[in-house]
Image (cartoon, rainbow, N blue to C red; front, side):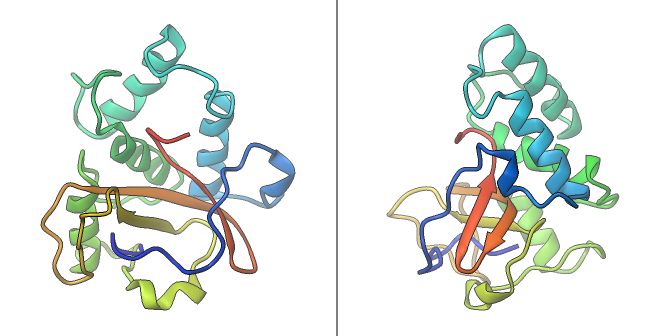
Length: 171
């Protein structure tokens, strides 16, 4: 996990919409993220449509928020919870907040996950969670995270400095 802070200086992450960019051997969270991306028809399904509501219901149930709905801004963290647990990370600290699960991973209360500062960006690989601030006025630091102004995505492919990511709320 890369903390909500400055984004990598590499090329802008692209949004995958073509399966040929996904490694054919994708497993775990990467495979689940791509499957979900395809269920959303690469961002064409409206989150408040019948199909969108059904997809969101699965995510919210996994995040222990069964009352969540399409109007809830925080379904992106529920999406991460769903992808990680369906992808085999059995002790992922599910939370309706990106910040909450990031803190637990950073504090090493989860054995299958490790948090790394953005300075380690060369080691980012498929299946990692990339977190960052949602707005320009967010000043989160790796060891000082107190805001809910973060967003995280799953890295599904890396080619050089280019990352392909999939996440909730942002197609």
